[in-house]
Length: 82
Image (cartoon, rainbow, N blue to C red; front, side):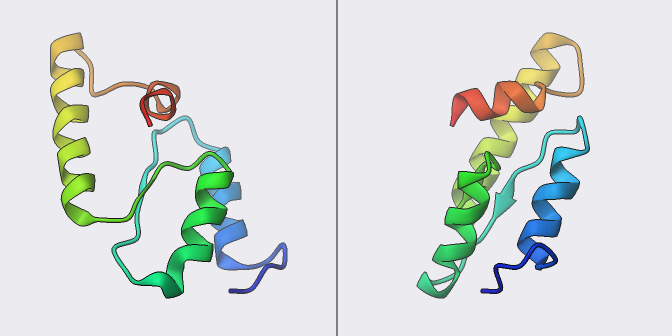
């Protein structure tokens, strides 16, 4: 994995940092992608390594938003749950 400031993972972290929208990443792949998952997670991006876990979270996210009368919890609420 490229580790320069212009690498795709670094660019992704920068983009995520500029938005107030909640963002999670699903990397349902083998150990080849462990460095990417660790890098994103280390930057505070919630990373799911299995699709079924990501979908379970998405269901909880939507239900929490419906109960709260809004589209969903803020990105900070998501980080605190992980």
